[in-house]
Length: 126
Image (cartoon, rainbow, N blue to C red):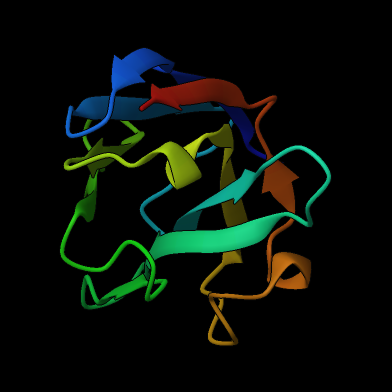
């Protein structure tokens, strides 16, 4: 199982940008579909973005499409989430997640992901 550690969260004003990183260890992520989820206080954890292990296809929640970009550097075993034009409603704990190798199922469902990081707090002030 891969271990994931997120970083890059913080406090930012509305309209600002942050870049989250997710460093993986224990196994290469090149064969894993990687994703970001987030959880706001009192709410369910929700899908944000994902990148498949094959073909580099990316997927986004409607709420972040056009503002967030997920990318991966397999050589560094790291996944990123570039967040632009941040809004107060983006405030949440952001989690990195990884599937098992060669996952071909859903990339937006929590149950698809076997490994999770501890999360990093993102707070957007108005």
